[in-house]
Amino acid sequence: KARYRITKLPKYLLFCYKRFKMNYWFEEKNKTIVNFPVKSLDMRDFCEPHVVTSMKSTKYDLLGNLCHDGSTRGQGNGYFAHVFLKNTGDWWHLDDLDIKSAEAQEISCTAPYIQVWECQEYGFVPGYKPEAPPPPPAIATKPTSDTGKDATAPGAAAPGPGAANGQKAVGPDSNGQAAMVIDSGLAISAP
Image 1 (cartoon, rainbow, N blue to C red):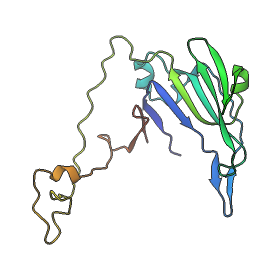
Image 2 (image 1 turned 180 degrees about the vertical axis):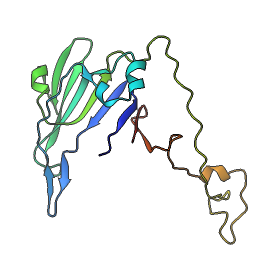
Image 3 (image 1 turned 90 degrees about the horizontal axis):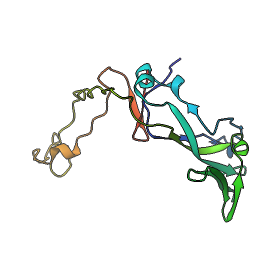
């Protein structure tokens, strides 16, 4: 069984829970309650060892919790949110024009759809020097002409100064592992 490990933690994490699925005839909602802490969610167990030793903190606090109210997305149901105000330390429940205070215990046992988390102390430990990123792997690309057409096709113009604009490259990282980036700061590698 493949296990993914986080190779870089961002300042903010966005979690999106897959709540809806389409069966043969209609859309169904997964109403599973997710228990989670609103403070100090530790990502340590999901990170590569060098991430744990290089980061000031691997703990995150919840800032926002978006929930879907109803059975499916298309039946006129809405969304409500819980938002944490850092300057006052209070949680708020927002449902259209209905705004009221909320308790952390109420939030920690909802069925979230999207969550926003913030790192408690973002940055590297003092003295840590990140390694220089490896050079990108050499990947063959098809040359293109200034018009964006395949330069190797019959009747195509010869490649000119704009040839690089049409080139696309997708491939593994320097270690031969597939890599994907989430939220422009969270990097995950496959074994």
